[in-house]
Image 1 (spheres, helix red, strand yellow):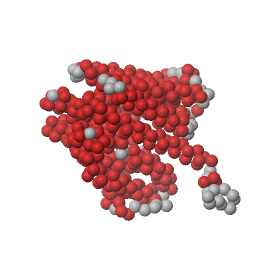
Image 2: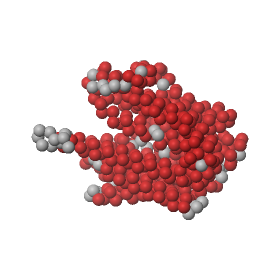
Image 3: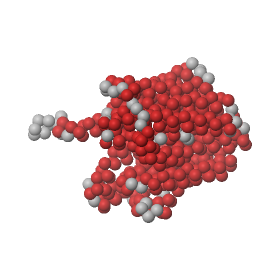
Image 4: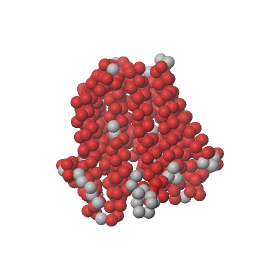
Length: 450
């Protein structure tokens, strides 16, 4: 190994704080990779075992509850991390209050989804699965421990718990496949997985010398947290609607014209393709996170450097789109047949269309750096709500005629408007539209910007 003149490797001379943050980031990256791999492997076996119709029923139930997931997170996660860093002496008060708020959110979610499921007259199997998946959310309040570890730059602890949660949850699901379990049992996996995560975080919290029984609720703290988080709750609901509503609407709309069995099979094909494309979306997020500090520093130092780095990031996002989507378009169908079987050949064609969505996903992830650095959170809320509303409207118009293909085009159309078009209507966002266009139009000019 190369040694410097003072007898140590270059890495050994890096500041101690740098090693701390590098280790933290490395563990979080490993967590993402392990969870991604376990989900992909498990999905292959579950999808092949259940087939399009039953897999569609499971994903319908999951999406039905997932639309309201923002009610249990309550937009508190980032706020809690921030306040635990700023006010460590109020740890028990902040965590206890956040846990109670999330418990209330879980109760609202449970009541909402069960009422909607009963009012819609869903078949018994779907109602039971919705019930089980919604019950799992009552364990989420214990996940506030995750935010505590993140505030302490102890991502390695959170990562270990998350990886154990994912691996044990996957093992439970694979066991269900091996024993040929009925469909409803796959919904219990959500409870098992959430239970493992809650227990893991509480055990880790105790091993660091803390006790969750010391948490306490404070009314004034609750009002403060809710005042801070309510825009994020609306933002989260809009994002979850845009991400999950298509599976529900495919099942509901086609169920009236094609029958429940055919509609469930269509949801199954769509969900299989969607899971594959979502798995490819983690790379841009990692890239943007790694570039975020440099862009933030440039914002404070030099405007032209800040613009150049944003344009460079958009170039990189477009290159990632080309590298992944072009090959995927051609290999999607045989790949899906290889992984999931001949029954899912239709999902292969859907996956090839989903490849187009990666363009908007990548650019949207890249755009988050601009929104964060400019503090345009109200604008971001508007784009999310408009995108969700447009997605619902286009789904109603396109699904009856084009089925799952219509849902894909509805999603692409809503992303096009929320990520690009709305920039033109807001003075603060117009420069970003030009930077995105420049990045896309000159993607081959990507270079190191000092």
